[in-house]
Structure formats: C-alpha cells, structure tokens
Image (cartoon, rainbow, N blue to C red; front, side, top):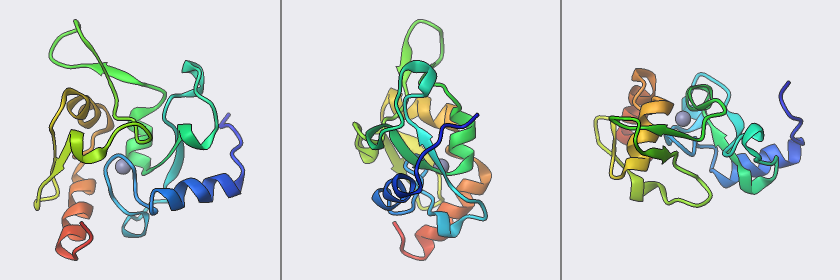
Length: 136
Ligand SMILES: [Zn+2]
C-alpha cells in the first residue's frame, strides 16, 4: 500500500521541483505520463514522508528506483549511493548533452543513470525536444 501523502504536500514538492523530474529533468508537461511523489530514502530504509525526503519523479525514474538507495558499479566491492535531490547538486553529478543524453560526472551519477535508466529512449526524446525549445 502506498503511504498517504496530503495533496498540499504533493503540490509543494511538485512546485519546489518546478514540475520537473528531479532525476532525469524531464518536465511533467512534456510527458505523456503523470509524475509521482517518491521517497528519496524509502520507508523500509527508515525514510519518512516529510518534504525533505520527498522528490518529484517521472514514472520511469520512480519505478526503476523502487525502494533501492544504492548500487554497485563494475564489481561488488563498493556500494554507490544514488543521487539525493535534497543534498546533492544535479549538475555536479550529471551532464546533459544536446542529443538529450545524460552522462555521469561522478560514481553517484553513474550508479543513478544505471539504475534509474535516465537514458531511457523516451526520456532522451523528451529532453532533446526540451533542449530544442530552449528549456535547458
Ligand atoms: Zn525521471
């Protein structure tokens, strides 16, 4: 069962994100899908339904992330946490290209791209269109 999050908090989180996925940077208005309010640190890992632990996310990012908080890159010797929209600055971990592709600047960026599927073909098309229209 999904936790209840009051509509006023949902709207506040969406507005804070400027109605844009905090992970892949696609705007909700440029998507065919309704965006989600997601727990950055999932409830099962001790996260709360407070605004500082909630993020605005497109369905692709949210569903790929699930309740995960970290991953491995290359081998299983180092755990890499995901990008945290409240604590991290997006452009320190990622770079966006005119093709719509997102590349990583850090291991956190690399792990987040891998698990969230930030370069999903639909997301690339949406970002490429946004870039062409001057939204980046
Ligand atoms: Zn997204």
